[in-house]
Length: 326
Image (cartoon, rainbow, N blue to C red; front, top):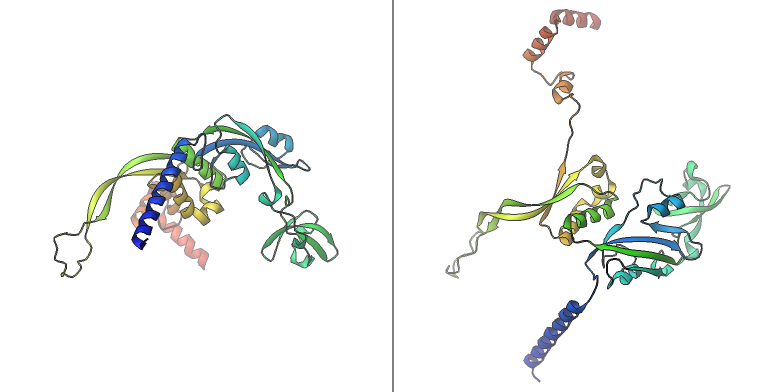
């Protein structure tokens, strides 16, 4: 068999594989990877039933974790993107809205196995005085841990995750499949930033520079011409986002806004994200009033007019100031 015949057979095999994959995807029922779903769940460790996570406000109240400023409500995730433990994702894939289930995530796939070598003795001098007590979360040489015991000038610091070695059991309900793209974007922002900003999607007409197709009749011997561009009006789907002060100061947003924005574009299917900063009024105290007190907001004539309106003698003020300097 010649190389050409082998290549042709490989190409035919690839085509068959693609057709089989497409048919399997068409026949697949229920929720699949890439789908947005709204999920309700509560997770406990299997051994001592310690609460790991919940979307239920009643459970949060019972466990006393509802005072931490977190909002407890169904969570929007994208299946197959690692937004929740893989075992939970796999249990949800193929299900339908309204389905419920229970799945156990083994320790190694949850928070890792417990490693005794990750418990170290360190000098108490490395720990802030306010954190020198058992249970305190500390950072030593860039690693996060917690103090298990502290005696004299030595502390035992456990660098394992507090839930390392624990299997975790999830009880979940698939609330709905999320098709609304604004709701999808809001769910992603809440997952990344812990807040749900005000946002909306519009289609805008935008002028942009696009390259001009080269002349096919041009002589091949001619030197390559400089690329030419022309202005063209195109439609772009834009996700508008109102940046509140809370969001602007959010560490996750400050450090990763480009990556977050690109992920929203890819998953929600918009062309771009525009973040709008809103500056509210100051209750009648405008910039003019502020700058007037700084001596730089008005011209000399404006100041004199303002003093005359207030029935103040400018010369008397100057004399008083000179007397003070002496």
